[in-house]
Image (cartoon, each protein chain N blue to C red):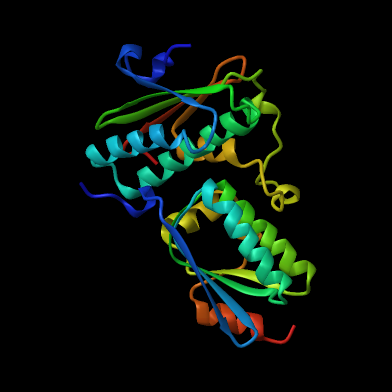
Length: 124
Length: 146
């Protein structure tokens, strides 16, 4: 029996640094059970002095409103520290979710990590 | 409350699960529903939307309807065939008025972390129907529809 990725429960994240920018690659599905841990990880990254974050969504198949709440809070937190949190390369379903929620008006969304990173590195 | 007549399903055909009021226990009805959707060959986009609406409804029931009370329960009823998916979620709370919620897509509300659940249910399902008390929600997704 096949299982669509969105129906699976697995979630993982990788943190990478490229210059002054942190790239947070999210994989799998973010459900409510993952949201708290993700929120804590984001808060720790920002507290460590990394308010320039690219969230790589290229391998994220599903997120619910609890996950969106984490993105929103991290976005605000980065902005309050003089940085930015941007999104990169969402899959079609996630891009549609951002449109439905109008969060595409809140978040800057880039087609790939390289473009997003250059945006964060550019002088203000 | 029985299934709304315009959902096109016989009430007796619905499966029913009663689970404790916590998100971990609610994984079982979700697993069964996802399994049925897969068995009937629902496409990934439709599955995504149904999963999202279901999780939002369950989260609302657990956290807001039942106020996180571990002594309360959630009732999940569902019916899935090749043409439609029907899901009902009921909590034991006092209910609420869904029409009185702020619009989460309004500019001034975009940075609010919460308050998107019902809007998502209404966006991804074809019909969303609350009972008058507001502690029971019926959702219909017609396969092949936008």
